[in-house]
Amino acid sequence: MAVPELRPWRAARPHVARAAGAVRPRLARFVRAAEPRVARYARATAPRLARITRPKTWQYTAGAATAGLALAAGVVTAAGPWDSTGQRTAERDRAVALEHTGGADHGRGPGASGTASGSPRPAPSAGAVLTGLGGTATPGGVKAAPGDRAALADLLDPLLKDDPTLGGRRAAAVVDLTTGKRLYGLGGDVPLTPASTTKIATAVAALTAMGPDHRLTTRTALEGDTGELVLVGGGDPTLTAREDPRGLASLRTLAEQTAAALKKRDLRKVTLSYDTTLYAGTEAHPIGVNENLARVTALMADEGRTDDSTSGPAPRVPDPAADAARTFAGLLKQHGVTASAPGPSKATARADTLATVSSPPLSALVERMLTNSDNDLAEALARHTAVATGKRADFDGAGAAVTARLKQLGLPVRGARFHDGSGLDRTDLISADLLTALLAEAADPARPQLRAVLTGLPVAHFTGTLAGRYTDGAAGLVRAKTGTLTGVNTLAGTVTTPDGRLLGFAFLANDTTDAWAAQATLDRAATGLVSPTPS
Figure (cartoon, rainbow, N blue to C red):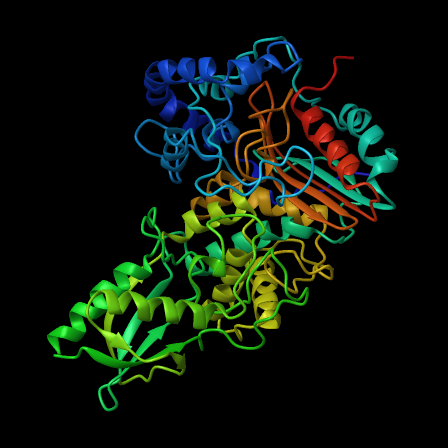
């Protein structure tokens, strides 16, 4: 039976060819500029690389570990968050911060690197991006992924269809992202529990609803008739009270600017309240109190974390909004303004805005959400999607808004269920076909606003939830969103084949009994797409 194409407009090869031609001279200059950095990184990591047993793995890992090469088939070189050298600014910033380590796979299990504060572990600056564009053979003689469906089935079936570690229910799909052709399918249209791969859907919905440049704004407003100062939550979970905001919206800056505005009005003592009415409904996620996320509220600082972590599980304050308002009162006092103990309220339309601080653009928030599997950010973006599309900003409204956006894009949402934005709700349902369709949508040259969905995917062995995985073979060549719940293991993302093709894949396993064995099987399947064993 013929396998249907994803979309008629997926025949993007002319776009790819033009994009490759346009960027090849610029990338050549980048190769020359990046060679010293790659060499330094190779020397610094030599002890770790010596443990890699697969021959010549590093030769193509160093050339592939950045977002640039993961998308090097040319689909996204014409548009998206690239700087003048062809390397994404975000990846360059991570490469500078080599001393930082990132989140591990949900902070649990063997190989996890913990939840140390700071940026994710950086991928090395990559020079050999021309390999992906020009189709040059990869060092080591590794064969490209099979071009015909039968050969791919021979490769993947023993793992995805027959391996008992994947439990009683499993599904899979593999597509060529430059043409939209499905290359492999196993129950691809059957919705299963997706766990954190749900965040891919949340990202696509949010970006299409608000655009990549949208920012989340927290403000202070002064009620003219009562003199009440209201801290108005803008639904930005990345708002920070830390001394070094690292590019995030700063509660300290907001306090300084607010105090200055109050003093101009000769006000040095105020009644303080806080407004969380941007969101509706219950703040408690169905999983209850949990270190994987705070209560879902429009006002919080540092995701309500009680430690110095910036990603992964952590103890949370019981009332993030009240805690943020108390912190804000303390910061006002440092600038000579005394505030009352804060309580909940709502700013009126008559209130004068005194000061504002805004988050990084939505594209950067999406990348952070996907790289770190940030549940707080995922729930916030789902609610903002509801706000932007006129839905009620609660769990039900956010789920309806995400579904509506994906349906509007013409994606296969039949049977899909979104009961949250993060995937922590076990009643969520997504098919492998929908996940690969989302990836194909993000790779479409006509949708540059979705590029952050691909560039935010963790890099195998280097960033985010894949930092502790793929020590061999596919390190740097697989970019994927992980998903882990009890009895659920999922993986969805992209791989760059040695011949320069960009593939999208989605693997879902439900009813697993050994999480780490299931995870290893899914990783082997993704690695197989990069370097299948020669027949």
